[in-house]
Amino acid sequence: MSNADLAEMVRPDRALTPLYTDADIFTEEMERIFKNTWVWVAHSSDIASPNSFKTSHVGLEQVIVTRDKEGKIHTLLNRCRHRAASVCEKRQGKASVFVCPYHGWSYEPNGRLRKVPHKAGYPAEFDSVEYGLVSLRTEEYNGLIFATFKQDIEPLVDYLGPARKWIDLFMKQGGGYPVKALGEHRFRFPGNWKIQLENTTDAYHFPIVHKTFLDSLDAESENVFDVLGQGGWVEDLGNGHSVMVMIPDLIDLEENLDAPIPQRFMDLAKELAEEGYPDDQVRKIVRAVGGAGFNLNLFPNVACSMAFFRVLRPIKVDETEITHVAIGMDGGPAAANRMRLRLHEHFQGPMGFGTPDDAEGWERVQRGARSGQDLWIMLNRGVDAPEGCAEPGHNAGDVSAETGMRAAYQMWKRMMTA
Amino acid sequence: MTIMMDPDIASIDVPTLAEATAFIWAEADMLDRLDYKQWLPLWTENGRYIIPTERGIDDYDDRLNIVNDNAEMRAARVKRLLSGFSMSSAPPARTVRTVSRFVQLADDGGLTLRAAQIVAEYKYERMRILAADVVYRIVREDDGLKIDRKVVTLVNCDDYQHGIGYLL
Image (cartoon, rainbow over all chains, first blue to last red; front, side, top):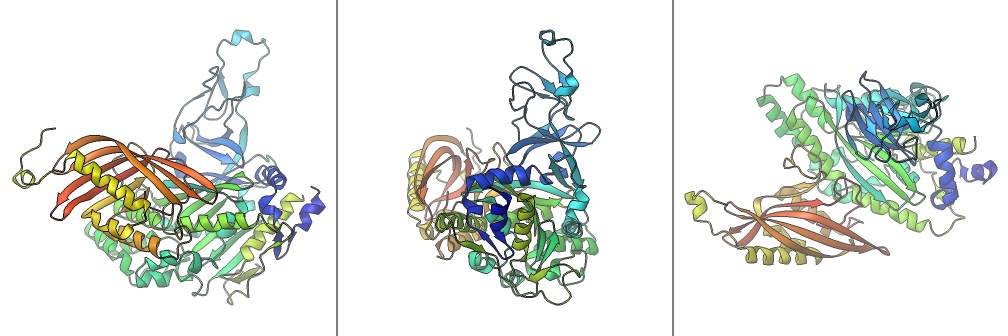
């Protein structure tokens, strides 16, 4: 497929259906996008101590994210340089060495080849330095670890650009403690990865798809989750990134600490006070415990979504895996982290009150997209953002605008036709 | 196992294995028929319904679970599943399940059992199998047997699932 053909498939306000259904386009996306930009691979708390690791993916490529004994983070292709066997099949753990189970080649957490058994069988000029695990460029911003196959790419901080402000705001839900990953829900749906990418910046579906979640809340919380009715907005942050603010009152969790404590957090506030936490700290923790009032969508595979990280992993043109990482307060009160876990379980996960309906909706998109390959996916929704919300110069629309999707598809077009 | 003959416990009539398995089969049948309104009163007041994301653990409250329901959350869950407004459960996948391979673990005033559960689910041209180890604690109350605890540990609980629009 030529660049001109691909370019024609994305217009400013619409995208053509084969973007969801064409296996050749998917193959090109894995090369031109996922092997060509910064891709989220882990949170720093996943590999908190020296010689810890976590397995992850960059597009279709399997990687091990490690922290070596000096504390430096590496992202290594999970493939022995001898005859390709994977060198690690654990999700997470500690290891000072990765030994290939097939012929015993061993690698250090920084990727260096340490030892080759029966080395006498190789010519004298065999140089171990040439046979380390393939190492990706890896950088971190405020706990978010990204890796890339593109060694000469711009620094991560430049790629994130104005999104950094929102990452910093998001991390305030540590309530004064560092943010820590507490556990993961993982699920797949039979649909294209971009359907999920769109969804994180789609407030329009919320009251329809998540009616039963809203119905399960107390009246006060139901008002908080009236995401279309609070003057929020969607803002294009460049490079395909966008932020969707649904609850403007919960943008900065360190502000407004004197406001009355919501009903659903009263028991927690009482418990923390009884444990001896001073009032100002109780208020800070309790305000942070429900998460932030916005979704930050980072192209192509991660979102800081209200109270969790949403990570997408393309599997096939019509299959995608989603990980919802529950986060909490590292070293914070156990009661607050328990409350965060229960809130996460309430909406997220394969049997949450929200996720299964999202997954069903995305599957229905993929099923519908089998028909009408010549039809457009419409992304033209949106009126002006409320005055004075978005940063000057940023393209922005009202909270239910499809501005974030348009931003992502323009980035898709830029990368696919480069 | 030996149990302390505490006066409160000694007076309790522990369910037999035969009673408990018949009760568990009736529950499984209820869940396949989506008879959730009849299912709610099968539980004790403090009963916990847990579907973990990790195997080999016993502290569920400080971990992330797929489900960790008390009575209030169970009632809310049933309301949601029967509301007709949840697209993943209106209609849900059809299910057919069996529970078997019962092993008696303890009788500490109630009967704790370990069992295997196999659920076949069908929706949208596709059949999936969900296998799980299930631990039940069954107790006898004035109006019959009750579930005091049910922990459904999927064989792949620490791997990916699909959306599940029914009860396990």
